[in-house]
Every structure is written in structure tokens, then in C-alpha cells.
Amino acid sequence: ILNVEQSPQSLHVQEGDSTNFTCSFPSSNFYALHWYRWETAKSPEALFVMTLNGDEKKKGRISATLNTKEGYSYLYIKGSQPEDSATYLCAFSGGSNYKLTFGKGTLLTVNP
Amino acid sequence: GAVVSQHPSRVICKSGTSVKIECRSLDFQATTMFWYRQFPKQSLMLMATSNEGSKATYEQGVEKDKFLINHASLTLSTLTVTSAHPEDSSFYICSARDGAALPYNEQFFGPGTRLTVL
Image (cartoon, rainbow over all chains, first blue to last red; front, side):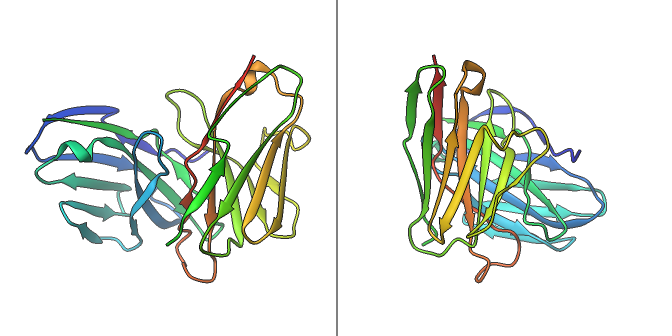
């Protein structure tokens, strides 16, 4: 059974704060690591697909890093805004069998 | 692009009845679709994988006779929960993959269906 852990489980920050969360995953048989942003009553939205050790990706104020040797990825949000409030999911893909194993997510609340 | 719709968004049914949930890829052809289930405070758990025109592959512990999956076209998959019981109450969400376009198992998700069985 693959274990994908996310921490913290939830997080409250003030508008303007920068924050980060962690996703840990198996370091063997790595294929890709996905980050999704999931707002209530909407579809999870793909943020990043990370495939290479040392990868660093950025989308506006959100960025992510990847360490496949030690099995972790960080997601950073710079200058959080209330509209960043959502659950952030990571999902591990091992091999090319198209299956994603999800963590439980980090619920971010940004207070104005 | 890459929009997936799911209907209904919410359904309440009586114990013993069957419920059908539809998942559609609106602007791409989904060679593979996935069905997940999420219980409160738990992660999304894959139930089954279906390829267009083929029988679905179910994950261990998921009853294929209870959760019927049909993927008859490249844009539509359905999940039917047969003889639903209160323990089937959960959040069901589908995703779709365009194998022709994206190489890294990228999946696009529908908004999910909240099923409550009374």
C-alpha cells in the first residue's frame, strides 16, 4: 500500500503571509508528483506535474519543489490572498499505470 | 480546455435503490476514466479504472457487481451504485485522461457527486 502524507492537515494564515505545505511519498518507483487545488463545490484544478528530481515549478505566486531521492515535495504560496483558500492535494504516480495515490490534503484558510 | 462535468452533484436515495452518476469530458476525448470515492477526512481512493470500450479494472476491495462502470464512448463514463445501502453514502468523483495529449498521468476531475443513502 502506497503512503502519501500531507502536512499540515489544515492551516490558517493572514492575508499577505507566505506559507508552505509538505507532501511526502515513496522514493522508489517514482514517475510523477501532482499538485491540485480544490475549492469547495468545484473540480480539483491541476497546479503542477513534477517529474524530475530538483524540479522547481512556478505559477504566479505559487511554486513547488521536488526531491525524489528523499520523497518529498513542498508547495509554497507567496503573499497569500483570501482566494487562495482551498484544499491542496498532492498525488503520487509510480510507474506508468496511470494510477494516482492521493494524500488527504492540506486545507488552507486565508483570513482577510 | 480539459473540462470534465459530473451529474448529479447531489443525490439522496432510499436504501435498496440504484443510482447512476455520469461523467463527461466536454472538450477532449478521454481514453481512460477513473472513479474515486472519498469518505470524510480521508483521501480520494481509486475505485476503478475504465478504458473506452473495455471492462473496468476494479481496485482491491471494490465490488464490481455493486459498482457498475460503463465507458461506452470517449466522452462518457457512468457509475451505477446498485442496491445502495447507507454505508455507500460518500463523495464520488471521476477523472479523465487524454492519453494522446498528456504523458504524465495527468487527470482532469469532475466536481463530484455527494451520495446519501437513507
